[in-house]
Amino acid sequence: MPLVLLQAACTIEETPQEYIDHLTTPAGELEASRDELTVRLLSTAPALERRDRSSLSGALSATPEVYVIGVREGEALQTPRELVDTLLSMTRGMEVDVSDALVTVAPGNEVAWFRLVYSLVGGAGTEPHSVHFTGVFVRSEGNWRLTQGHLSRELSWPPENPDSVGTAAGDG
Image 1 (cartoon, rainbow, N blue to C red):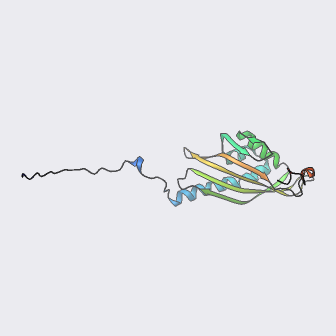
Image 2: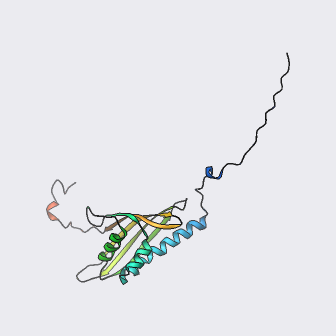
Image 3: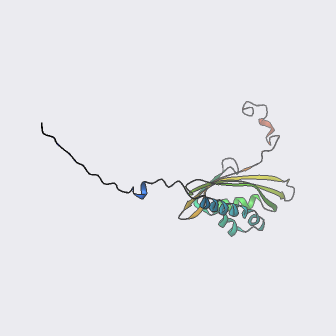
């Protein structure tokens, strides 16, 4: 029986860069993004007090197709102008302060979400109240743009519509 000897050779090639997991962004970059967005969001309060539409728009840097819900039942804001107009009308004649501002940046440094509370004081015949603002920023071509948001006011108790209390619909 003849002895057959086979020899095979293989080459090891470097893995192409597009197959490597890019989810690990250096902590410094994530922190810089978080700090940038936090400063921008905090700057909205003085912009609202000054009625400075340009600064407010620049801080939020909303995409042309932004989508913000929750202002009034059934209302959705779908343009940056509608968002700025609504924020300005909600805070007209009020002192505006931001509290509980929190920004979280995803590991890939492409998406960030936030929450903050506008504390509103002043205005003729208006009691102090808060407006909660949450949203999502997406980073595109190095720029953070607001893409989605939710605005909500504090719930008042008792409900403003006393007819719904004690009914099947009102009791849930």
